[in-house]
Length: 439
Image 1 (cartoon, rainbow, N blue to C red):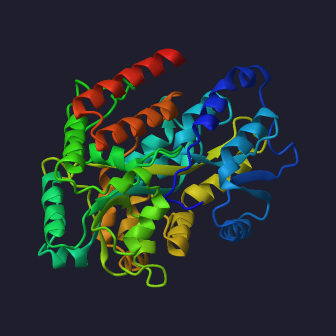
Image 2: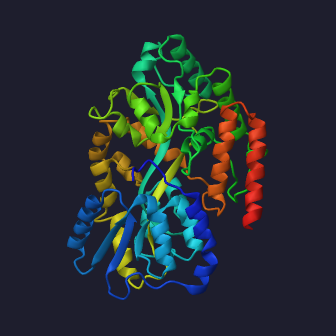
Image 3: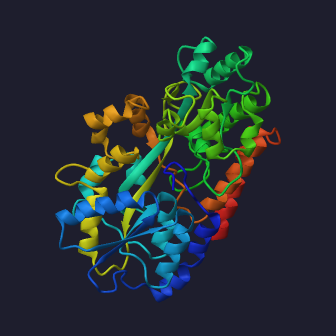
């Protein structure tokens, strides 16, 4: 699985939620089956590197046996749900932030508050990551990796249009895009992945968070149509950019992330909203025609000041009924915590594959900043992590259905089938109806 692409199946999440009564009734059996071996499962991102790192763990802890099983990413949620339902779940596992709430309520996971190393980790990571791994006031995970959204721009295209610095405000983004158009460089300077899909569209959330807005209050009540006007103002800009100044490529409605990445690497757009991780690929001369020209900046805001962006968190969690809890927690601390005072596995994954780190101290690590500088500005990279926010509604059982409504409503704004005020009302109505349905 490519780390920047969050696979969220609405069917999977809803199926897991529906299974909750059955699970509550039958319970689960310890994943190790009494063998003393820690069963560890994850989606199939770089299994050889995972095995290499588990080998490093085994050298430090030869008394702990680990059985690692990678699962195809597309079936990961379904497979884990089936295992836990069949009383044969793992002891330790990867978990998406999008799955955490449902899996806790389904009885799959146990909180880790008070266990060795947990407080130290939570004191050392970014706030957004800590919040993403917390559900109903309890901590459930140690961090695997993270990423967040920024504005990716082609510095060479901007220079040809007479632009010396990326935009800070949405109005500046619009004006710079018009300059690019007027210079005859391209008809549509801005694009984003706006095709309806089962994955969450992070750029929509980033556009709202960049200006300090929220779609929901912390108690998961919709605020986009009244209490918090920022989302509506951001959507007004989106409506104007698409239908009046026409800087947004209409093809965005058919774009998914990978084709958009390919278009950026081919120099077809001046701007897109993308994940920091993408710059590693964008600026690889072996993969990109625009290597060295693509840069990172904060998502422009309504008033030009940086207030936030959206972030994701992937984590390691402990099964609710493992019978090798101490051993499994020792493994989790190695994978998601500190070893000899250093977040060793987080460093390992960044240096091996560029996966975003949750530990604030790593932003000052000389080896890491030197590696970052090869494809992105380390200062901007760290700045976005500092202001990133977790989606505060992601643990709601109806979140996946709301995400579908959000994508559809955004498309209506992009195609002039809806105004921004009407869109905010529709989103609030959708959220309220879903909350009532699941209450």
